[in-house]
Image: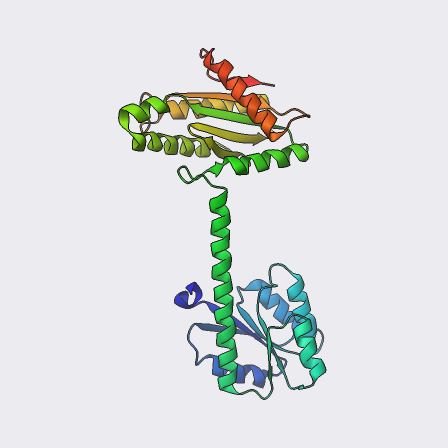
Length: 300
């Protein structure tokens, strides 16, 4: 668990009685990897949670102002804090209190006066669960990223570009689809080997990324073809971008002298679909191959 190794478990103790905070803190200090902070009312608790990276909250129920139930409810309604486990501390042992504690989103409860060993055991259990869930989320996030990323060049893949094209069309966003083709790659692959060819694709993708805006969506379509979704750019700005891109590709010392690129750009049309504009870019690319006197070809 990354958190344990980094000594970064942050526990917030919330109680309006200073003595209860000191007692709970004394027990928790016997545990490893625990950093303790505290609050003495609901307002302080909410402010403290948003101001720190809190992993677990020990929360008293009966407090003046905002009580523990309301604090828990507010935290569970916010996507930024809803995953933080909350253990209620209560002197009330009634079924109504216990039931409400779980209904508002509590993960557990401990009766006051609490036993130190029980407190540590429950805290330890919920911190382990928290770390496990965070690790699972991180893995899911990495898997999701892999599903939309080209493994060789680390830019997006065709599936993701198609999704963003569809989104841009549905939103009525004006954009250009830039299509870049490394035309000599097959020859380089035959003469110099696939590793050299792969290195060229990686270098070209890096140059494209370095010469694009953050709002641009860069993807490897397939083989030696790249696509760039360029939103809300005037034609003059696009021309400057493409000239700079070509100049940097042609001047790169990491690219073989035989590496040659063709670039075209198509403007979106009201009736477009992702398939239609991608097909149109291929048609434009074929026309550019027959007229290579131009550095690039732009079609409205």
